[in-house]
Length: 371
View 1 (cartoon, rainbow, N blue to C red):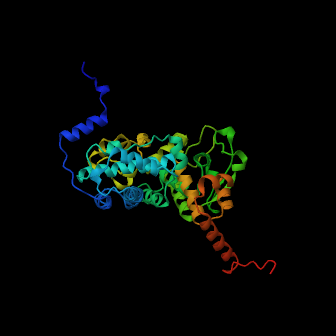
View 2 (tube, rainbow, N blue to C red):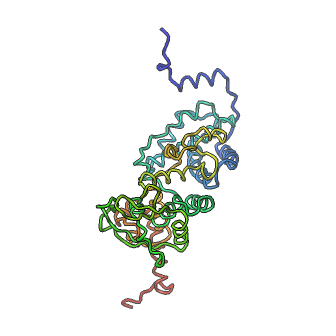
View 3 (cartoon, one colour):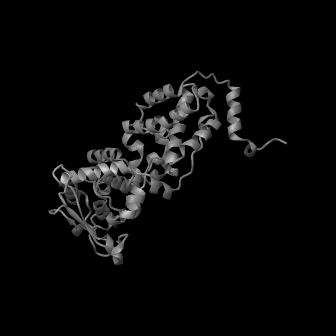
């Protein structure tokens, strides 16, 4: 009785096909393959993506050196599984997913270099990551945020999407807090936003009255907000007669719309025109995630709003802003900052404390107390 298609092992089929076609591989070292990969992709993706891929693949090169894999022709599925086990130490599941996905893209290029057989990329085991896990562990870098904001400033100036991105990326507010703002909560002359807990009219804040606060904004954000209100904001009220700051033709913006704009503008192809996830430039027009904003969340490179908040908080801490200041501004507990956001080493924390004390005591670091 003939075997059904379901009985055929895909990996075995690819292996047999590779043998049948007699793939002619040419020796290539891991180090040389990485340089070839970078050279090829420099014309396809942004410099920040190149740096990210070089960093991730550097771990693979290190593993190859430690395990005497000097020629990629010899790479096997078992090697890849061993590397995956080695690499996952100390990584979150979402970071492992990103690393292994980049490795698979790299190996696909290595097939074109005649360095590995055509069945090798499919043997990379990429872990499944839930949206909750991805949101909790991922963050967007300040460099990538600047690329997105520069693009929006040039092509979508003072649009609703531009304003939302400015607020999320420069205040660290949750999307519920951004949505809750009314026109009267924007104090232009004082360059601040006032957050108020209003559960009875559909704009609660996460920690209720404890989340109420004033958030300062820069003169640039003030300018964009003023232009948005003058030229782009529709003159509408919400279902409760309030005037929302972030308004659509239907009233107050929905949380789902804010999420959609986060996913939309974090797709790498929107800014660079190229896909770092294996879709060729001439195939992007056939990618639903690339062509439709409502499908943007299906792109493996897109991010929800929380990684923007996470990136903002982490950036503030890296810049030396005291945890108490970040806690008050972003409405996040000190224990949460310590556990989920502060990635600095003890030495880095000590150096920042020293710089702050020296600034307070005229560069001497000596308070004179008890001297």
